[in-house]
Image (cartoon, rainbow, N blue to C red; front, side, top):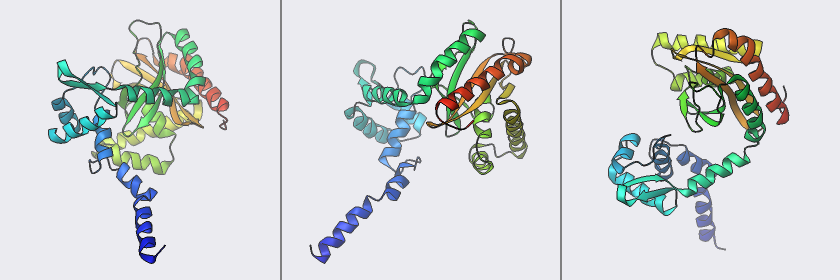
Length: 277
């Protein structure tokens, strides 16, 4: 092979270097086709049966012509289905299949589900596993309690990071350096609110160090209380959480009954995954 051919080969290999590919993938501001496609898919939320081109453009802040091109590609990949009589789009079978594979391969869920279901039945409230997704916590598994008026957890639902027990538990489990970066990136720019966030997270760290779980009393919603325990496993970093109306989940019940059970389940799951306690 001549020198010129060798140089061309090096250029082609360099263009496929992992570092350069990663730079394009993580650019979520719309500079890559992949990033824009993911933004469109993430625009669908719980309860959205279909979305129109206009609705997707509004949610993603992308121009309609760009949305149309992305939807064409996603439809060809079966990630999106076009519903002709509604002139709208819904998530396609390829995504459902990928989600099923991801859930099935997540050993954490297989271990946690029966333990969560037993606790949910005993206390009558929903118990879930959530994980961090940028500035939100998203439920990846949920077991509903028997109380008719209890908070209903749905897989895929996203909740705030700083005002919920699950969010604070996730932040509390981070290193101080990573936690500070999260506050800088996703927290309020208001000085007083930043101090409030820092104080509540410090309190969560103290609660978790003492009891294995942290609590939130009406911070996210005045009528809703919640508690959560970090769940660091070989599958990744998650949170085991429980929430419900304040009158069904008063502070004394959280600290004396449910919190210790939640922490115990978290320890069992960590142990089963081979993580140190």
